[in-house]
Length: 244
Length: 270
Image (cartoon, rainbow over the protein chains, first blue to last red):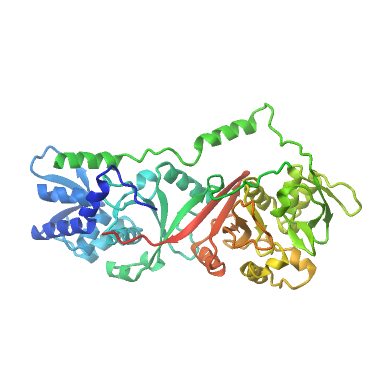
């Protein structure tokens, strides 16, 4: 599927500023300032300087919290985002209520206690982020994530991402019956996104620590409807009901 | 600049792409209105040239005795110089009034008789009502549809070797076997839960189609039990049908839906 850029200069802008480079800049800035985030529920709250705000926006990590504070900007990171920055990029430390930084295993266990599907969520998130795709929440489209090939202001999202854990009997509750397919494809179709299913190794759900994730495989499959009425290309004569 | 960025970012973040629905939503509403309205429902036009065929019970097929019209280049299989139609082909042509079918004793087989034939259990001549709906849907749109694993003619066996091997695997018979085995394929034996099987070879509409050298089908259409195929089942099928594009169909309340589950590899972006 070709990338759908928004407006004329978008493609040039994206090529000049690859996502990996911006993420790298964000990482450096956060490490330099020994950046910390505050664990709160299933989010991590962060206070960013002007420079960091720009970088968070350009890399699409976090959701802005609107306050009247002038020189600092607050963001909330989702648990996957926070864990990615903390565990994969090692550029933030997440502190708990006792003001002590949590280590990776502690944070992992905490996340699982809140959402036992966290290992799959995180594996999917980091799988795409590692390939330099921009990954955002997808709940408004009835999916786990939406993935963009670059910043959402420059490009339309390519994929609506749904996570399936490869269980033996495929009973993890997603896409179990045909109606589920109809429903989700309808939704994807009306927002012009392709459904991307990520099949995650079943060992992932049982991961007791994030290091277990490295060996878990992720298989990508698109699910698309085929419309026979629209697909009759390169035909010379349509062989319909002949009348002679 | 930062403010602008933030504003635009939020703008795009919170809006969905309000592209028009590509699923033909409005058409569905109209379709239902027509279905249930009490005004005249359009009928197919009567045609002048009607072909004639004789139903052969032992084969579960109709042997064409009088050929009229151009449709025979893409319908029916050729054996010993004669054309034989499967139950779905026969029923399709009967519905559009292009084929007149008789029994061995020359008594007329009505549409009702044919509907009854296809209803006979799961093994109704290797077909079913649902597979017929799929066949009819594609055929009406001009696609060329043959049963998976059944050569159009025996001249084409080399080209269709994959389909042939597939048939052997599926039925445990060889195409050199009895006349009976050549004609009947087990398209609709009860599928195990989650089991997936190829059902039809589908070709794009083509006025130059030749049964003697049909080439490779555009895709293989597979049926599943009433549940969507599992990842394992999809993979097994892809291995078995190596080299062929595969699609799945689901028939619900008279509507035929087609799906593709394509393996992809998202590129690593810069």
